[in-house]
Amino acid sequence: GAGVSQSPSNKVTEKGKDVELRCDPISGHTALYWYRQSLGQGLEFLIYFQGNSAPDKSGLPSDRFSAERTGGSVSTLTIQRTQQEDSAVYLCASSSQQDTQYFGPGTRLTVL
Amino acid sequence: GQQLNQSPQSMFIQEGEDVSMNCTSSSIFNTWLWYKQDPGEGPVLLIALYKAGELTSNGRLTAQFGITRKDSFLNISASIPSDVGIYFCAGQPGTASKLTFGTGTRLQVTL
Image (cartoon, rainbow over all chains, first blue to last red):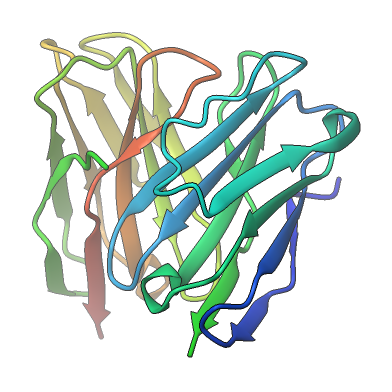
């Protein structure tokens, strides 16, 4: 079956612009996660959605970052007024209630 | 954010050699996972460990969940060129919760 998909695969933007990154989880998965991976680093947790519960936003680095998940499926991560330090690969993962997380290919964001 | 201590940072080995890497944490996890990431791809799950002391194999891969719940190791036997990539450990306090990742081990295999 289809895995987690993310779009765009690459995004180049100018400092100060807003960007939206999209994640389509595996069908039927109730949990959705966003992580950030800076060059040569491990993955850093950003935000977690589980069903209809309030999201866990504890990993968001600043109020310029937000995410929503509409209809319990697709999620959008928005970064407002992008800064150069926001450049990274943004990875989305989904899981079923008791299962492990499966990752998408990521969106590589470059802020000039 | 927090990252787990993973070592070694990188390894250069010859094809056919065995590989060992480990991961330690200052806090307890109830699940340990090992992922492999190829360039331009997301991490792919290799092995999941759910019980302290558990030893699990997946082909040439063997991983163990430390008895203290604060560490795990991954062994790869008889390495082959396609083993090249970055290996990450990850700890999870429970199912359906966020992962805390290690800093990664970059594996290079020479013929």
